[in-house]
Length: 302
Image (cartoon, rainbow, N blue to C red; front, side, top):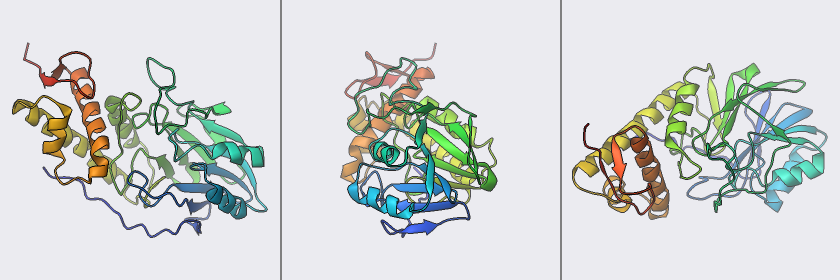
């Protein structure tokens, strides 16, 4: 099965303040890992009066570096793309130090149809935004205007932020150049994710700044590749079911040969999300509720 080409050329140095444009700076947190790549990028928008996108994990060192980077500036807004533990926890300390309000879609799990935060080892369950944003809401500073772009899927409360003046999208974990985004049920939802990808094709952004890895200079090409990749993953799952395999473990073993063992759990979660999507589309049936250890089969034609 053909797969995506990833760009892992990202030589950012943790703690270094890098100017990306006249309005945007980046500070990389020193929290590398299999899901964070080189670390979490915190973005500073504006000059003088600034907005912060994704303060990052609750790190003393990163907090100290941010305070130094923001010396003689006023933080007016703290924007959170979503409530995973590598994105939002430092917002509380930054808010206490600056008196800036926090902005986001809502607490963890708030975008789910059956609602309510869910227990999730990677989630920041303490974060509740001061201002709850909805798709299309605008936020303004002295030199910048940001549009809220609701992009659920990776998490149910995932929000991207479009900088109008530069046609730039701070896309969190929704789209990244270095790897695909993990869709992990129950809060992650593949159908929502695919819809959120298609939403980006209707925008005119010319560059994406994900919270992990390098910027994306041809964003629509990457989004189309993401959509094609997810379709291929679903086709591969259907092929395994047609061969008689029934469990997620069997499908992952066949479809993710050679994958870093540290990512096998993420591959299983994404496979479960794809199976849930195939069930919603009437192509697959489960023997009981769709779970990590459930059994699945192709649905017989009516």
